[in-house]
Structures are given as structure tokens and as C-alpha cells.
Length: 323
Image (cartoon, rainbow, N blue to C red):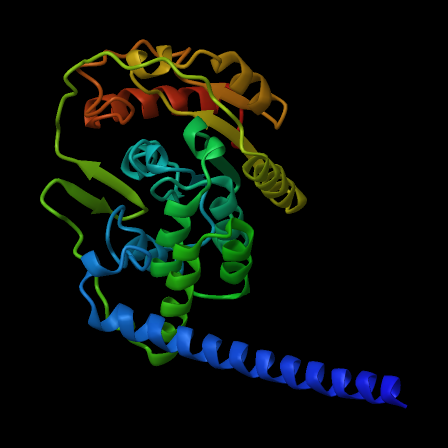
């Protein structure tokens, strides 16, 4: 009897313990969610490093997302990092009779590109997708771009899936904060300035920078490493594009010869991208000048953009990419 009584008491104790644990977890979760929102509203940015919420902070992503909602039936959709939205000038393509929209964003990795495609590919209905593949975005974790996407686009099940995939506390905080801001309509009337004095948003998603020149300096050598999650997202996104009967071209936009030459295994990256589909590396095609055609070690200035886009349009027509 004592043995049975002991078992009974132990079971009752464990049930109480589990009940209290669950109640505490629920209380803590509610308290944490509430504190994230209050902390984000009340505290200055310097006191909340894990809650940045970059609404309209850089790259004009908010303006780009508002414009893409009213865009459809274009010839070309551009995807990729800042090399996309600073490298493909939609005005140059328009002059050649090609309609386009640039859905690039700062540090955009394949994980974020895949989400943007799921949200907007069918609506934009492009004939051709041009995806700028900067090696750093395929070896990185994608957190910077994810934060940009959470703050400047809608919060949906894809946002929660992205946060779960990346497993980053800053993403969790920003997602909760953005979710409540969206519910309360706090950003409904937000309008992003179209210029910050140096960068100007151009209709169609391009960002023009005031003409500057890079002062050449040496860079340390490094080897590229591939993030398996990013490669998987790239492959799935390409499958999505092809499943809708659309053509795709992967492009590595030109960087300075100094930057490109500092990478010890460029051929590995080229081989990997070539296996994904049609791929062009313009570092091996264009002979640009580091100090004349770039404003930093890896971004074209406007003079470089005009050379790059002219050559790309020529290749587009020669290779019949836009059927």
C-alpha cells in the first residue's frame, strides 16, 4: 500500500509540476511578446540592438514593394542583392523597348528571393527572370535581408517560416514587433523619401547613386564557402520559376578587378552556378576600370552601369534570352 501511495503522490506532484510549467511558459510568452512591442515603441534604437526594424532604412525596399503591387506583365524581372537594384537601370532597358521591374534588395539572399517570388512572380508575370547572384549572398546567413523584408513588406506565413529557418533572435523580435505594427496599422501612412541626397529611387526599382569613384586599395585574399540552406533555396526558387514556364538567366554582376581577384576559388562558384542553368559572369566579359567605373570595391557607379547594361542587353538579344 505504501508503494502505491508513493506512486500516486508522485504522479500528482508531476501533474502539478507540468501544469505550473505550462502556465509559466504561457505567461512568459505573453509577457515577452508584450515587452518586445513596448520596448520597440518606447526605447531609442541604440538601446535595442536585437530589435532594429529597418522600415525605410536603406535600399528603398519599402517604396519598391509599394510599386511592385501595381506592376504586371513586364518583359524582365530582376532579382538579387544591391548589385541588382544598383546595376540594372530600368530606364536603359526602357530606352531599348524593354519593360522591366527591379525587385532587388540589400544583401538579398536566395532565401528572401524565394519568398519574393512566391509573393509576386505570378502577379508581375515577367517573360524572363534575371537573377543577380553575388557570391557573398549565397555564403551568408541572409539575416540582414530578412530584417529588411520583415520591416518593408507584409507579414505572412512565409515570414514566420523564414524566421524559423534562420533561427535568429533579432529576426524573432522584429517579426513579433512588425506583426503587431501591421495589425495596428502603424505603418499604413508611412511614405519613404525618394532621395537621401546621395541615392535616388527611380520608378521600376532602380537606385541611382551620385557619381563617385572608388580609391583603389588592396584587399585580403579569401575563399568562398557555400551555405547549404542558401543553395537549396536557390534551387527551389529556380524550380518555381521554371514550373510557371518562365525563362531564367543567372548573372554575376561585375565588381572591381581588385575585389574579384581577391577571391581564390571563383571557378568553383562559376561551376556551381552553371549547373543551375544559363549563367553569365560579367567579371570575365567586361574590362572595367576600378577607379572609373565603381564607387566602392564591388558596386558600379552610373558610368559603369551604363556599360554593363548596354552589354547585357546586347547579350540578351544575341542569345535570344527574351523569347
